[in-house]
Amino acid sequence: MPTLYFTVLFVIAVAAMVGMKLWLASRQVRFVAAHRERVPQQFAGTIALSAHQRAADYTIERTRLTMMEIIVSAAVLIVLTLLGGVQILDIAIGDWFGQGYIGQIALVAAVIAITSAVDLPFDYYRQFVIEQRFGFNRMTKRIFFVDRIKGVLLGAAFGLPLLFVVLWLMNQAGAYWWWWAWVVWVVFQMLVLVLYPTFIAPIFNKFEPLRDEALVHRIDALMKRCGFAAKGLFVMDGSRRSAHGNAYFTGFGSSKRIVFFDTLLSRLSGSEIEAVLAHELGHFKRRHVIKRMIVTFAISLAMLALLGWLAQRTWFFEGLGVQPSMTGSNDGLALVLFFLAVPVFLFFVTPLGSLFSRKHEFEADAFAATQTDARDLVNALVKLYEDNASTLTPDPLYTAFYYSHPPASQRIDRLLRHA
Image (tube, rainbow, N blue to C red; front, side):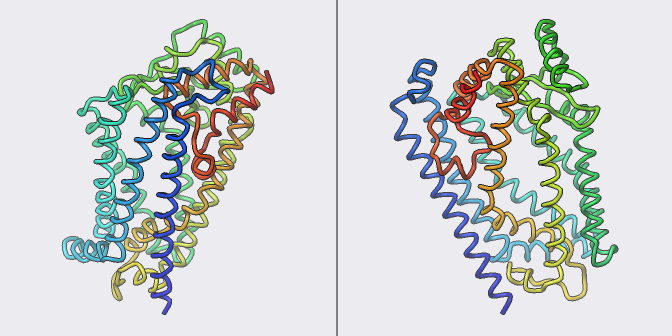
């Protein structure tokens, strides 16, 4: 009976997830379309109607593509689980490689390859149709596919050894294997944070030191005021792939870097760039990065403990359309089914993560307003929203569920209180 109950629960959860995603997306499309013909009063003097309409059309097209992606992804999930796709793969790969570590790693890799292959046409369409149509795409098809090949090779170089260690722990470390797997995971994540700026990111983009001496001086003064130290200021060739602009911090500890997209530097003034950077510094000063890491690590520990429990329950396998082996190892199967099924249930707590993220963004804005002129950050945000074709009129419920950053109107209203 537990098998049937779990199957029914999974089906209900998938249906609820898909229904909720499609309903929210349709609300977003309708709301943005309904407000397409008029620039919000708050932006009437800074955003042209043509730019507002372009942002609305861009948002609608991307959201409609996402709706198709939701349906296809759900269908693939059902095929892999309840319709026996994983079971077929497990039998076939077991015949080729056996039930040892190689066979289990091959099973995980095969499922990742299938889900990635399903995502590829959507990524391609998004890049070369939607982004191209709205003037954002600067990526060639060669770069598109080379990036993905690099991603696969990089994923294999880092992911396969990690996967082997986790499978070995599941088999050798006893009932509390998940604790040791969590320790390995935390060490791995910290290692990636350290290696990313100097070894991983340069595989995909070129980074050069910021050469604008006036801007460097301005940024150095800001960092001194904030008590922040970075290993360097760098400009990334973002324009090689997209017209979108951004800036970010990367690395951890002594490896921290500040990175500007070249597209951002070409659009904002020195004071506006300083204000954007002050916002990013606010995340560090308010310890948002540390808080998010702690939450992430805590959740990962809970998830691994849950996996350790579910991996010992036959109904977990059978409820998802798989007959576990009575003689060999089911560790690879457990990993695959867990990472296919758990996101379905975690989807319903998405608004909580979004809420905390928006709270952090408000706090970072408030910090920036104490270090720079709030009006400079407002001007920068307006330019970025216009340049990135971000809609100024998102659906409130869609925003509450998904948005990691507050809508433009809310951010600017709060910033102007500090001006």
